[in-house]
Length: 411
Image 1: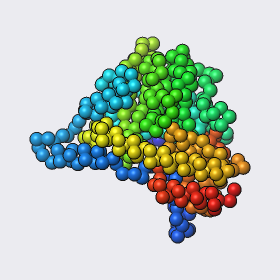
Image 2: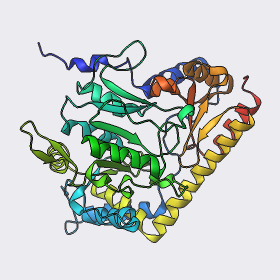
Image 3: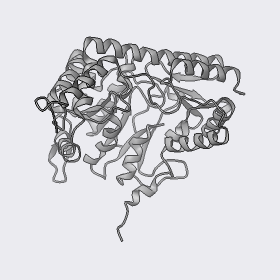
Image 4: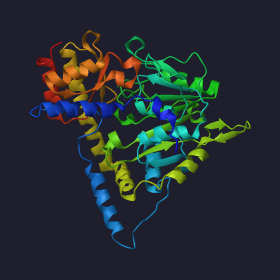
């Protein structure tokens, strides 16, 4: 009989958002008349920018003619998109990225999960707590951790606690680690790391020959000057950091699927024989073996956000969501609930009233005011006592949800 990968059995029973969906479905079945407002999963609600729609329509027409038809494209991405990314997101900020250091994909979630394949299974992993589940779960699946302990931590993982007591800025690990996952702006807390804080991490990685896996999926939401849009703004980061970016929340591509990963050729790891190997080469080999490239139509749509009209439209959409974030944050504060984030990110991280367990607060919010959020405990032990709301709903529902919390929630 075929055997299984036993590492999967180390994971909790279901993925966080699958458990949320199960609870909401059960409540809806028992209360079919309930008007549920969803501020939980970070899915967008506003349509794709018109510039993207126009570009995708043109791309469809191209595929209708033998003269302009395209089949397999370059697995790493078409140059019309990679060149636009480099020009607008990096060169414009004084960062030099080569064309063969960028890889277009079907989204940063996939890349964040798959990147660990090119690292040895004996590497020591450090993650913030709370954390986006994909970072941790994929390392568990790969066998890079021990089992889940009673305190909610996996054996063999270095956890970096982040809560209000340290302003959600993790301290450097006391032990040496090899792989460091950082997300800035952060999901789930909506908080950020300053230029000085990121410099500490880059310096640590250089001193300890570690690699920072930097998720910058929400970089477009940053409003404050002291928060870098890319880790490569930090001196020395190109020697030790891999950066992930996404079009999902920037331009509404959650269903269209497009993102990219930057791996400078100067980021290296050590082989068993002691030689240094570029992670870029390893990822290129993995990427071309397991992936046939993002659809041409999708890449044309993504490239359109870098046009003058596209940039204007994307900024309008981001401003829409950030206004939602302001409404939620200020509404929670008016209700006497402590809230964080929502300034440089579309997430608001709130402290549950009276330190209520976060899953209890989930049930309370759902049953009393018919609002769906995300329990902080689902992001790690340090998320207990916190709760995440997203600003990705439409304006009407966002306002209605805040009014329910202020006027109907019993706290």
